[in-house]
Each structure stands twice: as C-alpha cells, then as structure tokens.
Amino acid sequence: MIKSPLFYMGNKYELIEKLYMYFPKKEEVKHFIDLFGGSGVVVINSKYEKNIYNELNKNVYDLFNLIVNTDENILLSHINKMIKKFDLLIHETAEKTKGNDLKVRKGENQYYNFREYYNKNKNVMDLFLLTYYSFNNYIRFNSDGNFNMPYGNRKFLPEEHTREILRFKDFIKNKKIIIKNENAFNLLENITKNEQHFIYLDPPYANTMAVYNEQRAGGGWSIEDDIKLFKQLDRLNELGIKWAMSNVLWTKGIHNKHIEQWAKKNNYKIITFEEKKYNLGNNIDKYTEEVLIINYEPPFEQYDIFDFL
Image 1: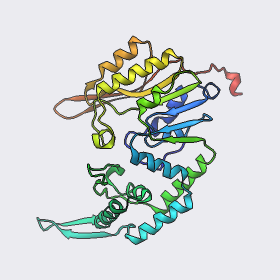
Image 2: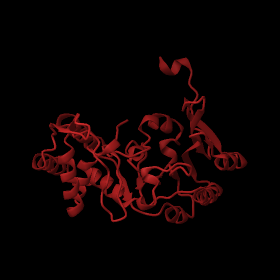
Image 3: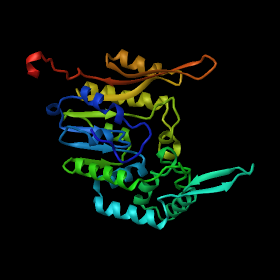
Image 4: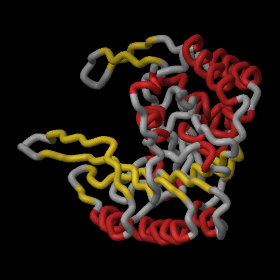
C-alpha cells in the first residue's frame, strides 16, 4: 500500500489494508468507483482493473489529476524552480514581539509571498507545492477563490518528498484510473443496472465541520444529504450492486443515530474499525467510533494449516 502525495483531511491511508480486506474480490468487480475521492489513496491502491476517481471539489480534483497525469520530471522541475525563486528551503528569522521577546519565524514571509503569487497566477503545480507548507497541509479557499491557509511551519523536503513522488508515479504507472469532477448524486443516479459495479463512499460527516466540508469547498454536508444518499444506496442495493461506506457512528460525543438506524433497518453489515475514548477535562469523556457499512457478505476465505505449508 502506498500513500498519496496529495494531503487531504480524513484520508484513509491508515485504514486502507482493513478496507481492502472487506472489499469484494477482484474477479467480482468490473467497475470500481471511489465516489468521494479526496486524496485518492483508496483508488490508487485498487486491485481492480477499471477504476473511477470522483471528486466534487474542483481544486482537489485538479490536484489529483496533476499528480496522476503530469510527467514527474515536469512536476519536480517546476517545484525546484519555485523553491529557488521564493527561497522556500526556509531559513530561520527572529523578530521582536510586543513583549520584546524574540519570536523565531521559519520561512513565514517566504510562504506568504509564494501564496500571493499563486493566487495571482493559479497554477495547480504551485498549489501542490503550497500544500507542503500550509497549516496541517490543509487545502482551503476563501469566497473569492483564493487560497487562504496560514503558514504551517513545515516545508518541502527535497530528498524525502522527491522520493515519495517518484515512488508514487512508479506505483500507478500501469493503473487504469478515470478521473471525474461530478456531483456524487448525479453519478449514482446514472447507474441504472448492475454491470458489476463496486462503489466505495467516504462522504463528509454530517456532524462535523472540517475544511473539506465547508460551503465554499463545495461541501456543507448535512443529515438531509445523508438521507438523500441512503435512498440512492438502497436503490443500488435493490439492483444487486455492491457498495461500502465509511462513516462514524460516534464522534465528538455525538451519536449519529440516523446512520445506525438506517443500516440496521436494511440489514446492512456494520464493521467497526476504530473505537476511541478520550477525556476533554472535567471528567467529560468523548467517544469516536469509525465504521464501514456494507451491503454484501465479506469475501473472507477459509484456510487451514496446509495452505501455509
């Protein structure tokens, strides 16, 4: 399994092996659709022959298209040129704060100069490089369409990150991935018969507000959107089309009852991947439960000791 060079909040790299353990066998699937593609980590690690990556957020779509379809030499050459032009290898500078204490800033001015340059020119290769420096590597734009993440006190590491990009390009060179920038509901509605599709969904979570879930990011996901999605999944289930959806039943102390009730009502399987309890002080415990909901039997095979000898 390989990481995506595209940073994206909520990406499933840490769960990817568990996900594929529950996904249908290769011979059962002709068309794999990663409906809310994000970083693309699920689709790039696909074991299926034909794959569709879909992402509504145009900026994220452009970034994924860049890292998949741009020659690595062109991309790395541009990155190195911008690093040199804006002094982005970063050196420490110290300045006095209002309290006369020295505050060390590592490349903050260089970052903001580069961010301003990107917002004037809107080159997707510059956006890709910006994400290595932004706060938490997040991708966020304001209502005017300008990238507005603050500096994250981090940087592009020439040796390490160049190696990661080259490894990624080598890993996907024989992958068949169609990249789409469509509304997820429109894409689902156009599926009217079972042609051995398998659909993976990792939609925004209705009870959280994250960078990827903001209105200006094409998000603003709500419980009403969940219910609309559930109706489509029920329709696909009636067609015999397999799907798997990542979601959370508990997060930040909130119980997503509507998801659990819908899954149990339709006899869909709920597989718990992560259960975390953490304390927020004042003896207040918060609970997170990340799950995978599937509408088919998991493809586990039975083995005995002789299979391993």
